[in-house]
Image (cartoon, rainbow, N blue to C red; front, side, top):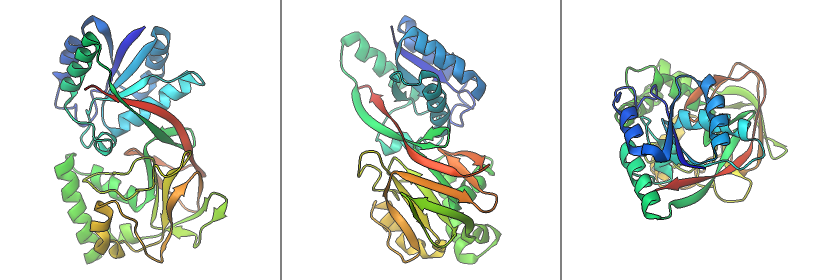
Length: 311
């Protein structure tokens, strides 16, 4: 059995300028852990198989939200019905949305050092269960389309990432919606799709926002999905054809994690089965990774993982 295996993504936005991280991770782990650098998604399956064979108890993931999504997807496929290792986020991304939502603090090396100290001293880790959202064959904490995809494409088109850049893009988003510039028009454009929630078809067949989350906070302190933990087997889903300009007066409500109320919000509650059938090309995200829908998107609750944080 190996107590900790760390997967380091050197291309995660938070790691690109930190070439010194990998050697420090290796030194912090010493002989008690395994460090594997993965340079593309195709390497994750082999690492997952190695960790399974070695009996790794906790996998530390040093990357951003997209890295968490890709690692978890690969591990779930390899492990199948066998218990997954516990998951320790090392906050190696530019936004670390999942970590912030779960109030996981610290920096990459500091978290690993605390973990190794806990092991040496026999101290328990703080553990919490966290369910995932399954989107076809992908797994993550948050998935969205419509204005969510437009925002992220605009965010990634910049020369930098991180909270400062996100705040700048957010302000440009608000201005774009109010000024009705080209970016604002793209945000306001409904996306043709049939959306079925728990067997009930939503109307009309065009939506500006489609969002499924198993966590509450989605960046910059905003918590638009407060019902993520309401019922076992569920996640929070939002389906709306609301004009984004109508959301601006409710930004404080979203930041406080309270329910949005508007006639054009067709659904904003816990759900256990959602099908989105695009009627036109549709971009969607899973934890910040962008994809083009090749057919219907089926959202269900994924496995429950154990997220650990050293004391």
